[in-house]
Each structure stands twice: as C-alpha cells, then as structure tokens.
Length: 236
Image (cartoon, rainbow, N blue to C red; front, side):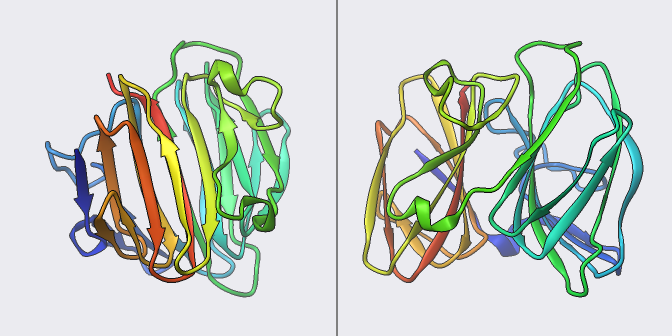
C-alpha cells in the first residue's frame, strides 16, 4: 500500500522568515489522518531566510534528524555542541532527558531543509548530537544509510539513532531504477527532494510524500534526475 501525499495538500505556515510545510500534524496544523507513519512523527519541509532561524528552544525524548537540501544550517546547544551542516549532509540530535538548541541560517541565501522526528525506543537517555558529510556522488543508484539505530547498520559509519529505524538517501539519473526491500512489520516514508519518480508504478513529484507499508520491495524509477530521502521504521 502506498499513500501519496502531494506537496500541495500538506499543512504549513508562512512566517515571513520561515516557509514551512508539514507532512504530518505539527504546530497549528492538525489532521487526525496525518499524525504519524509508524514511529515517524514529523517531516517538515522548511525554507529559512538568510540571517534568520530558530531561537533557543527545548526538546526531550525525540530523535531529530536534519537533512540540508540547499544552503547550510548552524546548530548550537546546551551540551556545548556547535556545528555547520551543508547541503546534502546530515545532523542528528537525540533529545533524551532534555536539551536546548538553536538553528540559524547564517548564509547569504535561503536554506532549505527536511527536519524529521522519530519517536525513540527508549525514553530518558543521555542527549547526543552529531553531524556528518555524506557526498552525494556516493549514493549513485543506491540508498546510503545516513543515520540509523537498526542492528544491521551497526558499525557502518551512519550517525547513531536511539530507535530501530534509519534515514537513507539516494540519487538517481533520469531512467535509472533502484529496488529497496521492506521487511514485514516495517513502514517507509519517501520524499523526492528533487525530481519526479514512480514508486511501484505510482507517480511522485518533487517534495510529495509517499507512505509505504506491506510492499516487500520498493521499486523507484526516476523520470528525471532525482534526489531521494527515505525513512524506514517499525510499522507500529
């Protein structure tokens, strides 16, 4: 089963400095049919104006992954971490017992990100933050694991998560096809950051979302050059 969520149907808000679209209920957008997808709770498509950003604010007991599509984001937190994450790269924050952080676009142009929240397997863990470069050239026609807490990904260089789930990315040239298995009891959510694709024959445009369950294999074909982000988690 594939549940397509066209970009134009997403919730959202325009705050001037921030243009946000929400794949799931978030802030002032509430849709009982779009609360989560398995343990995936939030997928926000944010455009942050130059010289602006999110002032210090708290989180707890959530796995927060930031995928930078264009520009860069600068992070600071109450643990003493500070870092700048550029387009194509990823930062993670396991909020655990609690952390205060800020995220600013200190660049001269708009920064565009996907911010993804996943419900952790364990509450009250020690908070953690990390960031890593993931060159897009290494994702050619196959998914690269960017962040994971799945047992099978231990030691593969992905950023760590406190959940049996993973965030993956791939790049496809027009006409290329890739196949990704999806085990029983697992759920996937796919968003093309760029480009149009078909997923098991179902069309997706750039920034549309597709919730996928009960599909043993996910077959993705690019109708044009595409950049894909996929989250895979427990279905329940």
